Amino acid sequence: MDRSKNNSTEFGNNSMKAAAVPTTNNTTAPWTNNKESSTNNEDDSNEDDADTSTPAKVTDPLAPKLNNERVMVVSVTERRRETWGQKAEFLLAVVGFAVDLGNVWRFPYICYQNGGGAFLIPYCVMLIFGGLPLFYMELALGQFHRCGCLSIWKRICPALKGVGYAICLIDIYMGMYYNTIIGWAVYYLFASFTSKLPWTSCDNTWNTNSCMPVTNENFTELATSPAKEFFERKVLEQYKSDGLDFMGPVKPTLALCVFGVFILVYFSLWKGVRSAGKVVWVTALAPYVVLIILLVRGVSLPGAAEGIKYYLTPEWHKLKNSKVWIDAASQIFFSLGPGFGTLLALSSYNKFNNNCYRDAVITSSINCLTSFLAGFVIFSVLGYMAHVQKTSIDQVGLEGPGLVFIVYPEAIATMSGSVFWSIIFFLMLITLGLDSTFGGLEAMITALCDEYPRAIGRRRELFVLLLLAGIYLCALPTMTYGGVFLVNFLNVYGPGLAILFVVFVEAAGVFWFYGVDRFSSDVEQMLGARPGIFWRICWTYISPVFLLAIFIFSFLGYEDMLGEEYKYPEWSIKVGWAVTASSVLCIPMYIIYKFVFASKGGLRRRLHETFKPEDINCGSVLPGYGTSV
Image 1 (cartoon, one colour):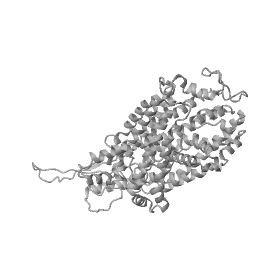
Image 2: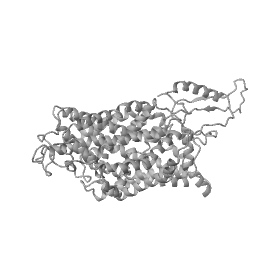
Image 3: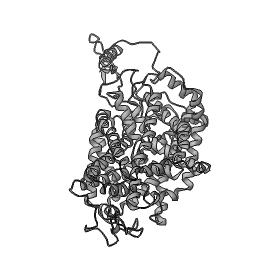
Image 4: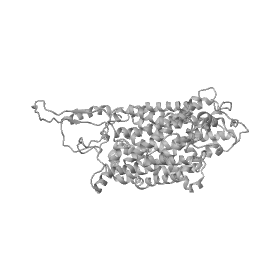
């Protein structure tokens, strides 16, 4: 039950009493500052942006006016942080962020490639011992400290504040290409509003002589399908570019579609959780409605049973291959999304005593079950396409964007009522993508608003507008004729490798510097019970090793991540590593800055100031209190 309306009045009364009556009571909430704030020590990052200040002037009106009299003005500011209007809004926001396009186009492919049903064993093992502990950690951290990914490090390990800046930079890179992918889906959605889907036949101006419908008995590997040519020659027009060496001009229609995505994102984020909390009711729930409809339709198609059988048939011998376990770990990590700052940001708007442990178990389970469900939706249709083309399923399937922008639309075009199925399918892709881009950008916005409340926090609407405008301008190269190559490039070198190292440092900072015992005590203050021995062992040993292993294997296999369809020039590989380094180097650079320039005294004192947590209030509210949003 939301008690915020009753509590806000009581909170205000208590604030006035605090301003009028000094107190010597040293009992404080665990997240508040035990020392009196002074002007010299006041940090811009420790204020909330709520306009709830109630300055009180303490003067005596009967006192004589002396020439040398100094009048002291004492201001008492109670900091409030807005909270979710309903618990369901938070859960939907977390589920919406975790369940993204990768659940649809990556998990099914990874599953059947690595042993079918047998892959679920390493997948669940990695979830329990690696993904879930990190997921739980971030929800608990954000809820206890009530800060974004920048300000929170003052209370954990000040030297590692560079982790927060690295996350913000990674979120910018993601915004530059992820919204473009959503823009492709918007393009398809508008193209679907016609009596006949444009990728049904080869009679269009963009088709080549190699085009041939997949239902044609003479269709061979040398032919190209109408759906493939529509995506490559109509939506992207990539034939007009020469890869990254010459990407060509911006395609206006694609730029307009992506601009529409940014407009939706802005009006979902401009008011914070007040606006995002309402939007997620649509963007988080709509994909499940569509998935269920597509599943019912898919299993009724001829050949669907063979596709599902291919998806689930276990190949136990593949479990001996270490690559299967690494793929399971990578899939769990990128699916749940710890380390992007989003879970920290979303949980920071929770009430202090919210059961974040239960939230972590529920939302991570929903995410994994959604991936499993999406596998049935995809493979029932792949089985149908194999039946239509009279070929094997492994000859039909594609990983990544090709699966949802070529293979699935190809199947839809052969169904009765194809226009309807196309519209709801691409609506599902758009809502899946929007939730994730909301989360990534909200992580950066919350972090910067918490860190700079005067300059940014009190002008959130303007800041979000300028931020999105800047990201859109930076994303324009992804909307050129060769933009698809840049999208894949940014996906690998933007967050792909860097985020793994950043999250490893984050976990090390929390579990080894801040300490598992201290972190467990924080959780106990919120939930009333200390985390069990399983969680403490995972946090101390297993989770950091889990992250380090994924990073090492991904680093060694980065060329496989780029794919084989396009050979990236040598100069672009060097630029890619520079992009990766731009975020990773934020961590050592800030450590040097903190130790050399922001600390004073001798070596021992500098080390103490650099690594010892500060007692900072990040804009918390009392347990159970908050503003109604």
